[in-house]
Image (cartoon, rainbow, N blue to C red; front, side, top):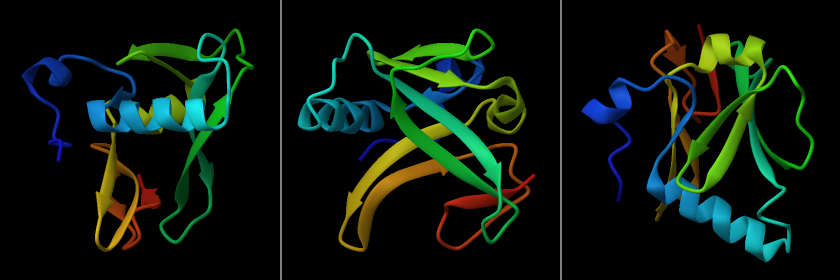
Length: 123
């Protein structure tokens, strides 16, 4: 299991961070869906809604806007629109595969509270 808490190196980085475990799962999904790894990007964002005010968005896409911020993490190109980045700067995305479930987990230092399911937050 990876440590979702950013290390000293991660603490100095800004943007959207991925653990190595999350990056491996994204690589697996890209391969499973037969996508072109040279073209595909992981779009990370937020939208209004969810039980705490904002919901996290993850999407594999080949489209990118000129205004998107780009981060290279463990061989994955992560993109985020500027408005979402206001809420996601410094977030670490991990992947857990445990008895109680599997999925991506967000460790967001900007969230003042999160819901029980972990898929939404309040800033």
